[in-house]
Length: 298
Image 1 (spheres, rainbow, N blue to C red):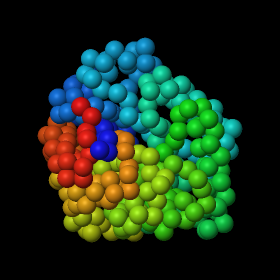
Image 2: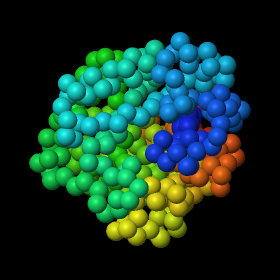
Image 3: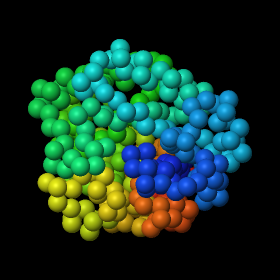
Image 4: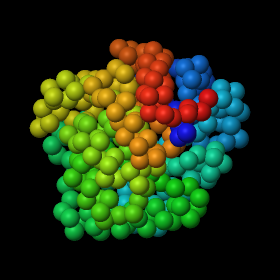
């Protein structure tokens, strides 16, 4: 039987890009809510101390492990030497935490954190530029793997690798492990099942982000920014949105994927209380995991 672990990201409680979309809860309360819901892992966020001497006992109290975490990469315009220095502290922390990977998100030229820059102004690369970028990220990924902390590359709205075509091109010109995010790919207009079919051999981490398709369809991408979309409610947890996660998870199972499925759904915690959302997302994942034949770690 295939093995799966269920994790969640703290972005439902505290948004790192929009402080106003944050619940006023402590790290301990965030972990407690995740734990009572049934999640066994959590990705890192801004209220996490980057020191296992401090964090380890807190995680142990709630039966939670570090199942990943974001790194704001700058390789598109930077060099590998500088990125090695920038990632060193996080790499040492993740190694101590026994984390499965570091989530690499390309933030150079990205407009994902710019509230007043519309989605239509995302960076676009030629194939030659993508080939140069892909080689650079591949070399960096090889170095990280050699340090025993692999990266998983996160295709992301408003970044250089956003659309299905851009992801196909990046994968063609790289050898990088992939973080598959169903919500970001759906938002970008891609076909999640085709992405799984084409790139399953490289998928090492999964974000089970759902979308509210009605919100996405109502956006004006020449005016609305990525953060505008988040505020309007573009994202939510599995079971609360428009995506068919049973079909998505069955497709991953058919390709033999094993590992983490992480709920990462940034939205207004006042309108969408994190504990209620976590419970809804966990229940839906348990349902679809059973249907797909996964054994979920508890």
